[in-house]
Length: 237
Image 1 (cartoon, rainbow, N blue to C red):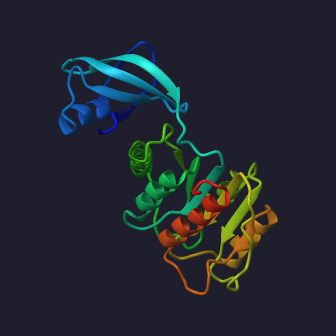
Image 2: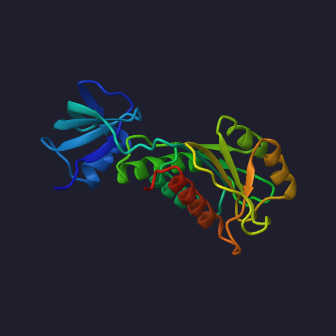
C-alpha cells in the first residue's frame, strides 16, 4: 500500500486548510478528495496524519488524526555551500543534497561564477527543496539562502566543527574527512576558485580537500563530496 501523500503547511491545528500550490497539487495532480488520508508537515520534524474532510473551491479542509516524530531526519548537521551553476544544475544539486540529508543549503557568487540568482530563482530552489523532502520522506525541507558576497557565505558556516573546502588545484589526496556530526562543505561553480578565495577560506578554519586525480563537474563534485561526508557521519549506514 502506498504511503499517504505529503504536504507542507505553515500551521497545524485540529483542522487545517490546504491552499495555494499544495492545494493545486493535491487536487489537480494527485486527484485527492474527501476521505483520502494524507500526511501534513510543518517543518518541525513532526509528521501529522490527517483525513480530507471536504474539498471546496479555494481550499481543502483536513482533520488531523495523529502525530509522530519523524525518524527520517539526519542526526548530523550538514551545511552545503555551492557556487551558483548554469542552467538547472543548481536545482539538481539542491535536490540531491536534500535527499542526502543536509540541514542547510547556501548558494553563493564568487570570482569565477558565471551564473546568478534572483528572487524568482531562489524561490524555485526552495520549491525544489520542498518537493525533494516530500519525495524522500523527510519531515523538514532545508532552506536555501543566497549570498552575493563570497566572504559572507564563508562566515555563515562559523558554527560548524568540520569545515571542508573542495579545491581542484590541490594535490590528489589532500585533506581529510573526519568522523563527526557537524559539517560545512564548500564547492565552487564551474569556474572553480581563485587561490585568494582558497586562502580566505583557510583563514576561517576551512580545510582544503581534493576529490582525486580527475577534474569533476561542479554538480558531480558537490554530490560526491556530500555523499562521502554523510557516510562518515553515519547517515548512509
